[in-house]
Image (cartoon, rainbow, N blue to C red; front, side):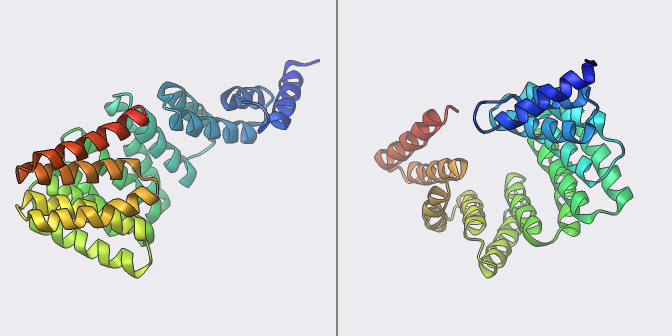
Length: 272
């Protein structure tokens, strides 16, 4: 039999086994690729990349995202999404920030060429997150503002919260407060309880930095049960640390230590 036929037969068998055994989606994508079934290969490479990223296998994730891109016939909105994921969910985590930025700049050019506002906003948001995390704070501010100008709906609210948190990091506390309070109001209007809780968490930090400890503690306490109920582990840890910092500032060290221990226990449970 021809080799492509054998690869196709192997892929067909593996497809029937998904859900029953742990099928390597990257291997499955390879078989479809060698069989000449490029659409199915892309589907499995992408699913494999996302699974690998979820399992912290970032080298594998990067490799499979790149294979998807190798098989992509022409730039489109999906390729913008894939480059964003490759950049932020694999390359950045691996410390390959220059390569991550290259992919984001390519994605941005494609999104603008296609006049895809949502894709452009998503990519600018990724650029803001990346530049913020590598210390290019002025570039991050510009990217977040540009992203917000292009976004709408849920994405706009997510970006607004990120902008507010970023402004707090850069010391622009009053603008951060205004941005986050607007986000809380908008999210409350559409029933986004978890999003509003995350905004309250960031607003609590703004109040802490502005020496408004009672407002900070109130907001952390309001956000904590919502984030805990939704399974937002980073948010829960953030709230516990924020509350602990407030107690520490007030020299209530026993209460602070208890909260720090809770946060540490959660870190240990999730393997962080």
